[in-house]
Amino acid sequence: MTLILTIESTCDETAAAVVNEKLEALGSVVASQDELHQRFGGVVPEIASRAHVERILPVIDETLQRAGVRLADLDAIAVANMPGLSGSLLVGLSAAKGLCVATGLPLIAINHLQAHVYACKIASGEEVFPCVGLIASGGHSNLYRCDGPTDFTPLGGTIDDAAGEAFDKVASLLGLPYPGGPSVSRAAERGDPKKIRFPRPLLNDDSRLAFSFSGLKTAVRYRLIGPGKLQDSEASPPSEQEIADIAAGFQEAVVDCLVGKAELALKQSGYRTLCVGGGVAANGRLRERLEQSAAEHGHRLFIPPMSLCTDNAVMGAIAVERFKAGKFESLELDVFPGQER
Ligand code: KG4
Ligand code: ZN
Image 1 (cartoon, rainbow, N blue to C red):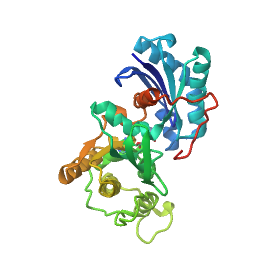
Image 2 (cartoon, helix red, strand yellow):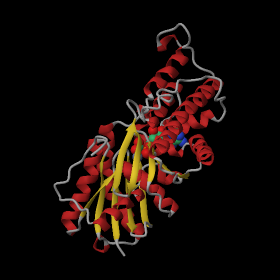
Image 3 (cartoon, rainbow, N blue to C red):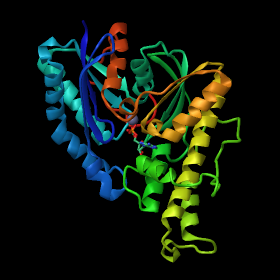
Image 4 (cartoon, rainbow, N blue to C red):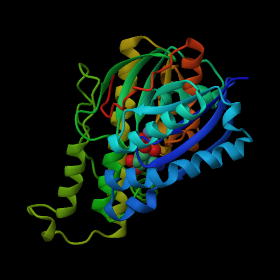
């Protein structure tokens, strides 16, 4: 049985897992840094990389212990080296290289966004390829044509903020805690999504598979400041109900854009399967609307459970595919913080 240790440190979660060729996780640990970034309303890269340095070895140790596996039992070490925050990525990559040097095991590179799509296969146990992949997270909002586990073609993405980033920034404007996604969606449950109609940028432009969420965030800001006023200092504090209505209206606008462009990507590609991943895929309203859309248009829909939507190392089991294909890396491997490679 092939056993791979997978390491994930692309953003603010330090995670590791031991996975086998049946895509089962023998052990998995996710150390969240949410409490460190909370008071800043977003991930602070320098704090994130320092926290990864402190946590990475204990997380790997704990993972091996939970899996009941020694380093000598492993067949490869895999690490997400793209995309993400450069300092964070470097910590995971350095740990992986160190383990490879110490054990002589081969090194496998994981593309974090492809791993988010692959989580759909892991969770469902079904063959999901070929499919359209929709990734909506704190750092990314992307669409892919996925012809196989090692064959991804980018179709489009956000031209400014990511969907999760918009949730986090709007939460901060509304005085709701970080991470913004869960707190905005909780507030939205008590709100009327039709009360305020926020813009749906690019949604009606069928020529582009692109998202734009920064204007939406600005629209929320001006709504809070109030008509005829220009500065945040002129705003009167919103009532609980206003916060709930803004949260619901904002969430509906983001969901409309994500669902609309995913439908367009399916239509353009002719593919009949949609795989969704990333932290924003934990959003209940998004899940509901994606299910409605799948029922209406007759395509297959895969969304992993919450624990496999947000950052984790189990989705790094995509490394099993690279292991089978003999796609190994030299110890010269670098990090690629940007989107695509
Ligand atoms: O994939 P992820 O764990 O990390 C990145 O790679 O970015 O995604 C984190 C993002 C955060 O922006 C968070 O606010 C958002 O996912 N998120 C949600 C929900 N849960 C997490 N957004 C909307 N609704 C949620 N329920
Ligand atoms: Zn992610």
